[in-house]
Length: 457
Image (cartoon, rainbow, N blue to C red; front, side, top):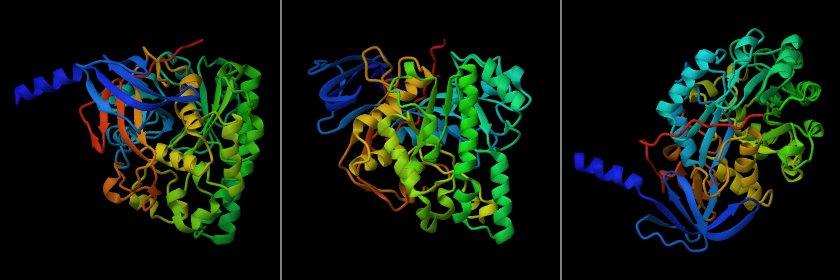
């Protein structure tokens, strides 16, 4: 047994050579070899000779930078009956995501520096991929917010709409202070709470306690989203804040954003999520509460506008908003059913299906899901395939069909809105810091990711 352990440790120190992959990076593609050494990309060339390295024949496969998901809810601490860092980061690795940024609405919510560092300790112990955790804001914790070290923390999260616990920030005075004084990126969930509550009361007056799931996009309406998003943008412009508006769900909100392509020209950026790019209100009839998210999945016209905004660069980032709940919770009636669903295992393959359908290119997927999260959050030495960068990468087969079943789902909750769907493409290999965490359906549970680091102003 001891000899096997020594052999494994020696194997982990070996270089890895990926041969003949079609590399997609920085808006171009070419057939290349890539050499990994000591956790980093050592070389990229037409031909690399490294006879001592572990070799992977990648002919016919596409080599991408590992995805950076800037919005996940992995439910730890306090909500681990839904999911945890270990299970959900394992699912992320199987989906080609090599880094995640996790939200603060756990139990307790991450509203102090002590609680934030406790989450980083959990990440170090349990994350199968690289990790960062947002600091949370409330109406009462400005002093704690301003202590945040943004060289080691991805950003500050503000819920300008309903959230769990006491994380709704609806004090104009508090918002002004945070936008003025915070020294790092602010990420916002934007839905106007007053509008949502008014719409909910109208639906309850009409349906009583039997409000249908189809009412969700009308309760959490276009107006609610736009009022809140426009307020966030107004505050950011006034105070020159770095603002990132999460999960844009409506065509109307797109008017708030610039088409500038580089982050040097932008202090205000935006994100779209897989479910808003994939589903529309018509899907509530079949999927019901499985596609109940906040903000809500809206009209087909909104979905089409979001897809087009990926091309115009009004949408800068694609993320998952992975937010698992148990099957028992999702089966509850609309008014008691929680919003959110699991997505990290299927994010990349869903985007590849959208690519096959002609909605975006492979280069755009790489830009929106790897390059731009790295640029906007100023992640150090990740998000690109470059010599010297951390070797976070994924190999995909664009033509290897597979069906999502309960048996191949890795989420702790055990379900997916994609159950029964056949994806055309498959993730074959995922590397995190040069370590082969996912290999043709087999996950190496011994690998741990690293804490992300960030450039600051």
